[in-house]
Amino acid sequence: MHLLYPFAKRFIAGEDLKTALCNVQSLSRHGYLSTVDVLGEDTHTKGQALAAQKEYLDLLKRMKDQTFPLDLSIKLTQMGLHIDPDFCRRNVETILQASGHHTVRFDMEGSNTTQDILYEGIELHRQYPNLGLVLQAYLHRTESDIGRVIDEGISTRLCKGAYHEPEHIALQSMDNIRENFFRQARRLLTSGFQPAIATHDEVLLEEILKFVKVEHINANRFFFEMLYGVRRDLQKDLLGKGYRVRVYVPFGKSWLPYTLRRLAERKENILFVLKSVFRETFGLGRLQGLNL
Ligand SMILES: Cc1cc2nc3c(=O)[nH]c(=O)nc-3n(C[C@H](O)[C@H](O)[C@H](O)COP(=O)(O)OP(=O)(O)OC[C@H]3O[C@@H](n4cnc5c(N)ncnc54)[C@H](O)[C@@H]3O)c2cc1C
Image 1 (tube, rainbow, N blue to C red):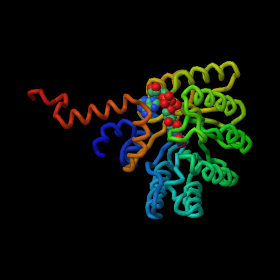
Image 2 (cartoon, protein in one colour; image 1 turned 120 degrees about the vertical axis):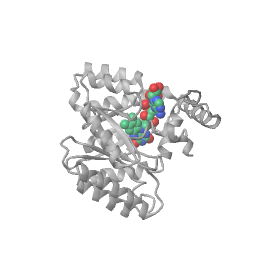
Image 3 (cartoon, rainbow, N blue to C red; image 1 turned 90 degrees about the vertical axis):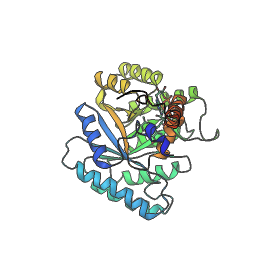
Image 4 (tube, helix red, strand yellow; image 1 turned 90 degrees about the horizontal axis):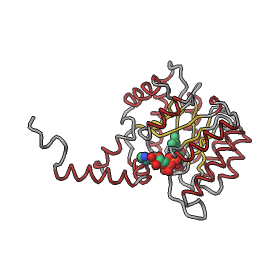
């Protein structure tokens, strides 16, 4: 699987905290905010979950003197949701207690975890108002979940959804997903607390920009979010237009599941990987023929 690493490198901000923080600081110097993700999910042992928790705590320690607010993206299955929900909750609470002025956001995972993640998020938010959530536009249930997070005043990221889900659980066609994304985004933008619109879809972004203009929604009431290494041109464009842009910055050694999701999103990505493997296997690298 190391053959995927040249591809993975485009999407991850390093394998260790030091490199990731350099990238976060560089983004900040250029005007971007970051939401940092310690890569990893679906841990099977308490030791793995505690190691991931320690990475987040180390990150917070290193961020203590930074004045800019950071967003942490955390996966509850990484914190031990499938091992023991109480253990998972204690792990997350330790991070929340150390988080200071930063936001701790629960990434949304496969549909077998949606209810648990939402439940934990809503419960913990009552004690920790800096807790944020994520909802996926492709899920049928999101229509009602959006109402819930709006009522609770929880800062929520809206994304399309990255997992394969069956028809009875999720919309399948891109047109329907887009339509639902736009409908739910309008609700969050008008009534939600500091929502984040997480997409690189230009059709959607155009509709949303028109909507916020017509509705006079101020740029400081929401965020645009995009993935590290994806559509930097759009990130720059939105920043230049005066919007707040937060970049999802994943780092760590467990990059494979995240990378496979990015790979599945674009057929061009699969071609990129095939070309790298071909070059490496047959010695067709650019420098091979040069007489240096
Ligand atoms: C900040 C952020 C956080 C996210 N958090 C979650 C989460 O918690 N749970 C979850 O299920 N999903 C999450 N996602 C992933 C999301 O659900 C989508 O799978 C992903 O964003 C692609 O959808 P899109 O809206 O960009 O539209 P798409 O139609 O997939 O892409 C639109 C355009 O963006 C570019 N693009 C998109 N993806 C790639 C890629 N992999 N490689 C190269 N170019 C690409 C292409 O130019 C493409 O034409 C997150 C996405 C973002 C941006």
